[in-house]
Image (cartoon, rainbow, N blue to C red; front, side, top):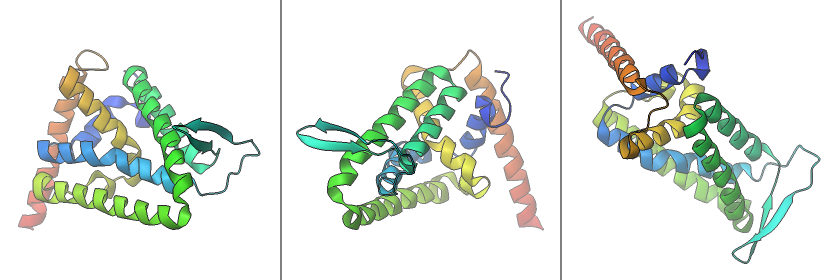
Length: 203
């Protein structure tokens, strides 16, 4: 609870939550955020590895899987490590999902080949991002968090929807009082934003 900056779970969750307070918008993000992460790893699979390490090869469902220690691996590792630091319990589940996304994206990318994979990824990314912008414009009526802090929003998004799902389905809290504290910060953020928005309209 004493963590600061990017590693303060309350502040990070409240920042993202202030832009995702409408239940329909939250549901849209629950469905579309992880596919963005997954398909990004699919296309990153084709970046040549910069580690002089042998590939990890094994069979899965009678198909060969080749795990390459490249940018996709680094991205998944950074996300996984960040989530564990934020909250060891839910973060461990998030880290497992990151690892699974990396493995499955490698399984999908290799047979597709780059010429087809980039088209599939492009369509998936366009659909997922469009759905989220609709969620913000139509239901949340507030611009996405990435307009205020791109890196923070992109990195936090998968963990936010995971933690939101754990709270909704199982009443999970990283520690007692977490949800109440976060909700107070979210309400304060939204109130401040509405006041600024009102002043801009009136000026």
